[in-house]
Image 1: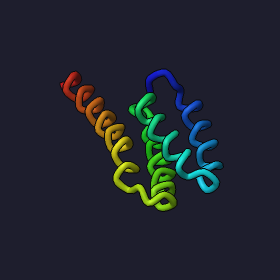
Image 2: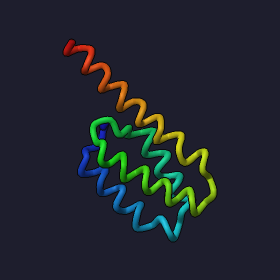
Image 3: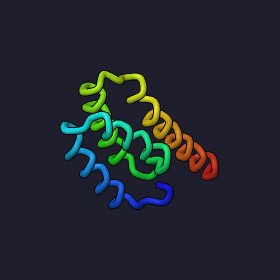
Image 4: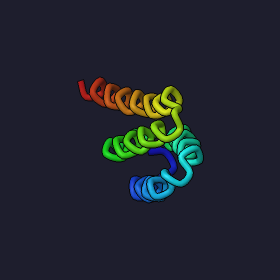
Length: 90
């Protein structure tokens, strides 16, 4: 991750998870901003947690298209980084 540790990301996701039911739109916006500023490249389990949370938020807000886009971009960055490592090792 860029500029944020896995522990910090986990803490942010915990806080957002606590607030998701009370403020799904704010949680959605925060997750999109988080995905844009701190791509989850090195933390696959955290990516899964963020996806699950975004899925819950999408159900609450009805915003399915925007819910998937930022996390899909993060996943693509994660797999691209893995491809680069594999190519460097070959």
